[in-house]
Amino acid sequence: LVSAGYPEVKVVAVDKSKRAVENAAENVRLNNLEGVIECKVSDLFANVGKAKFDLITFFAPIPSYKSKRHDSRIEDYEGKTLRRFIRQAPGFLNPEGEILILYPDHYEKFLETLSRKNNFTLENIGPIHKYFSVFRLREITIGDTQNEEDKKGMEKEKNNEASSSAVDALNYE
Image (tube, rainbow, N blue to C red; front, side, top):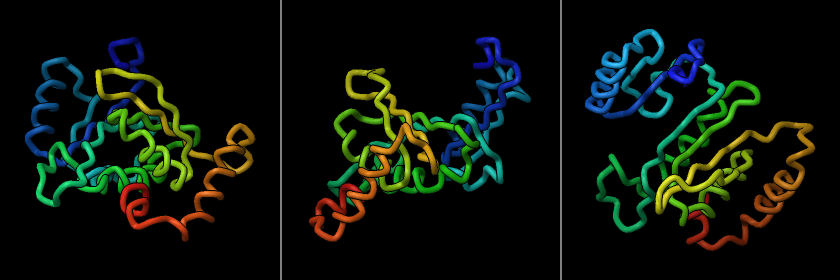
């Protein structure tokens, strides 16, 4: 965005890996973007303070359901990191803000259910790789007539939760 002629854009880049943040900071320096991009070590929003954003992008770790012993840098046992992200994100979005998530296509149903349960609409913007797409999430607001079907769908899901199987609860909460 900065290079596309939007000098007023400010970016906060976070990762829980100190090494990843150091690498990002070096790229910021090499591209003369100090003062525009701030790099922080943070587990999701933990070190972001009270900042609010128009756009939040998230390259979510890949869900894993096979074992609790996994590489947490790239795998996310039972989608726990994505669940935390979607629960926390509304507190950091400006009104009319949106989230873009890079996520595996074959987990779209999981992402859709998780989005609905957390008062978001979900739109698959399209593929960017053989197995991944970019998904847009927007908060459903009171009086948002465009999203009435989403509200009805969320209400129906909440009413049907009691009859969900244990597998559904594990995979789609």
